[in-house]
Length: 143
Image (cartoon, rainbow, N blue to C red; front, side):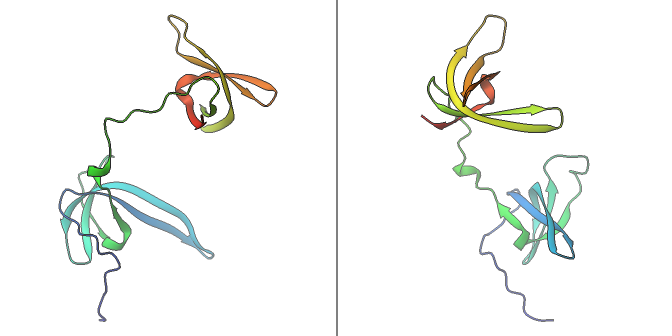
């Protein structure tokens, strides 16, 4: 057996949160990339045992190569950060989920509508059309 060189110099330890990737292959190569959020259960030199963070079989450790893991640096994440609130005049994108698919629209925010007893709505202009959407489905593209 040849010498195995580890491609990653990332150090893993028990309890680390990681993204683990795998793939489905066909005759043309990689067909689909699969991703799973996991927690490191036990570290080895080239491989680790991880458990899924959520799901039916989250209790069962499984073995993956370190080369398919990406550590999530929780210290760099700001859990107190809030989403930005678009203002009138901003160029916004609205993402709307209908049934089993999502669609998006880009336009200028013209009005913010807050009616008592109803959810906050937004009126956006998309070219020459007006669309009313839930305010919480907007993100700012340009201010």
